[in-house]
Image (cartoon, rainbow, N blue to C red; front, side, top):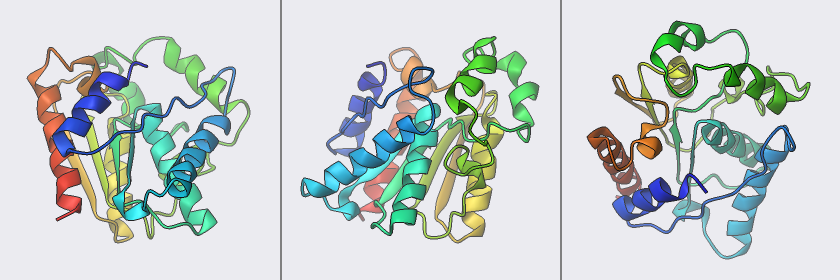
Length: 214
């Protein structure tokens, strides 16, 4: 799993155990299978004795989308929210509302290729992108757990995070935005052993988690 190295580092930084979920992927498994897997994983933790107040959920890129849709499902089902949520460069708006999708294409070395133009349709598989479970940017964030969003200003999904934090704050959610300049998409992972900014970001994630328990 490509996410294992940096999730291990996050666990070390925060002094917590990590469950890394290998949720099903499009195009073989389009919406809603991935979000359903993640919600099932949260319920699995609860049935195995883990208390919501001791759980932090998170994800990067599409995983950030899954983390937020998990919160939406938790709210819909009337289950207790986790203590917090972390999203790294989340892709949470698949409509034409995102200005930075095109504006930042020249500065996004990871996402700016033809892939992004088929990834989204493959995931949607005909689903309505205005559905909050598809695009969490359209969710009602009232009652959500505290959220940490990390993103680079050069990423195509930059304004996904800025709008997320703005909208969440407007509903009273403790939402924190941490920005870096000139970093590649999900540099916390892809630059883990090469970029000092990756370590800095992971340390900040660790501090966010520690602060939630103070």
